[in-house]
Image (tube, rainbow, N blue to C red):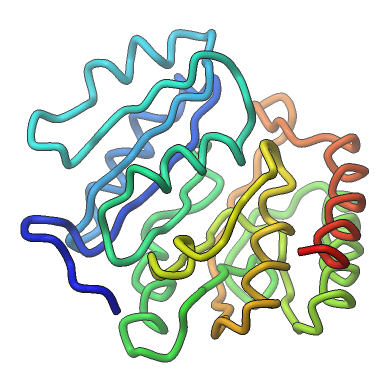
Length: 236
């Protein structure tokens, strides 16, 4: 593991945000509550619902919470690249802002890296953790896309399209990411698999949203997901 700069945190939590005024403050309280040496990097991806104004009051003078602003809405992948560049920790964790994923799961996500057994950890919604029962066809689509990804990577992951991705900083430093939107998940999976990094998967809890509650992913993202899976599977 690389040597940490003096005063730098062990964990960098990167949170891409787009129009999440209703949830971001609660989410940040939950992240703060996790007892680990960390910094929180919030990347607002061109929100138009007042999220940016709210975030201005949540940034902390000590740098534990930093807010970065994208000029316009470029997508989750673009926001994550911005956050990764700013991260100072030895480990980087991706956290969505919509309360579907619970920061209380950080200990099990970080454990394989802390033990020196993993370079990358994915949190799986399908390995037995508690989850809200919701949207059968989303589940089917996820299984199809995960299976297709596994065909190309020769991995046996159960949930490629998970929010919870955790990386040692060295991994991200050696991966060139291109996807601006939801294709990030299959792109990073393909590239860390091809590079031979040690990958673990652990169960997490999941409280999915309905579209009425603000869920953003659609069938168009599924079509893009197939294209990205094939593209990065063949030309990672």
